[in-house]
Length: 141
Image (tube, rainbow, N blue to C red; front, side, top):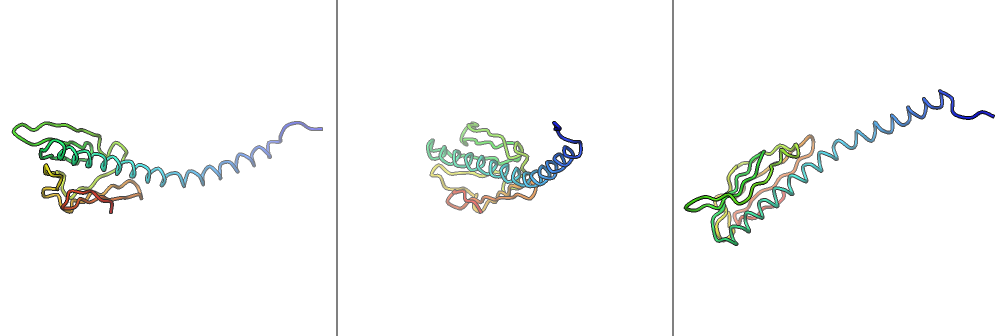
């Protein structure tokens, strides 16, 4: 009676595991890209909605600077005051293309010259986009 495995049996098992791992790795890459884009879109949505609600709450005009590296919210007035700073999509390895890098929100929550600002997020083959309306709302395209 023999105990253990032969070298050929071990090599066959290792080859099968390698093929299965290769198939799994090919499917994980695009999924990671989609998750990174979704995370960047959710972060931008949270930033934008926080800025818009802050404008209404404080009754002050808000300037939102949308950059790849950072997102900055500023109350405009006699002296500008920064109230919100978040990391941009680059933190997730996502590129951002913006039609207008600065968006202003009036104290009543309406967009000021922000109509149809388009934000496109892209990483690898995954892409998503957001757009602002004249009412200052942000919607997914």
